[in-house]
Amino acid sequence: MNRVGEFYEFQRVDASQNEVVYGVANVGEFLEARDLTRSFGGVQAVNSVSFSVAKGELRGLIGPNGAGKSTLFHLISGHYYPDRGSLVFDGHRIENMSPAARAKLGISITFQAVHLFDGMTVLENVMVGGHSWTKHEWLEASFRLPRCRREEQGIREKAMWALAMVGIERYKYHLAKSLPLGMQRALQIARALCSMPKLLLLDEPASGLRGDERRELLSLMEKLHENALTMILIEHDVDFVTKIASRISVLDQGQVIAEGTPDEIREDPMVISAYLGTAISHEVN
Ligand code: ADP
Ligand code: MG
Image (cartoon, rainbow, N blue to C red; front, side, top):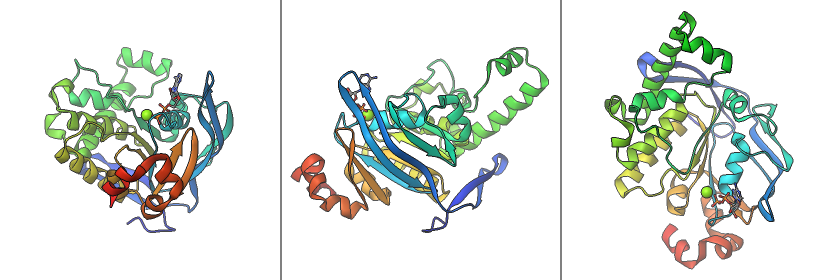
């Protein structure tokens, strides 16, 4: 479905049939960063990063600890603002937009640490992802006006669709905290999907997972990719990311030091010396 030069855009979700229908959209760059820079005190966490991601692409983002990967994600999601540089998403200049405004445009992030509402069910946790209320809408909601009840029903349907998508719908009435880590990660992804994203940023979703859980996550990502959702995946395990990403960007000390196909990345001398080392390059062979 996802052929080179042909990109798809989300058009319609049919929650009752758990079916996402995509259609052919414009060809072109979907996300484009230019000279993106952010420092904390004396630390240049992200230093003049330029890169672009095409619609429907699944991009891998790797690099050693402290390379600036999570900071780059937060610059894209709006949780951090850049010191300088520009960011264009789906035709909009977004670098000064709030996280909520970017979420409305279709950017969604799953954080490195699992953040769940322990006292809430799996379904309720996912439904949180569907809300991007203004204060005014929140007031209406607290009086349960008809428009809000309809909206709530719509969010519930999207949440059910998202849970089916990640394969944990049978646990919808369980408490979120009762799930094993692999399913909590799936729940995080379902919550992100509930906002109907066009770009999903996944910050180390596989970390700490067992072998079978990693395989399930891999097949979930393949499924989302087949549905032409644009994704960027931060992952520490190079083996995992090379299995799934068609292109990989390598970050080191806040800068993009390499970008290419998994094969090109494995063979890049800069990458080997900065990150992979002999031990890891064995692992990916
Ligand atoms: P990675 O995700 O690649 O491990 P990070 O983006 O988390 O790297 O961090 C990059 C650098 O920026 C690190 O040196 C980190 O300590 C620093 N950093 C990140 N966020 C903050 C922050 N909120 N305050 C101060 N320093 C930060
Ligand atoms: Mg990180």
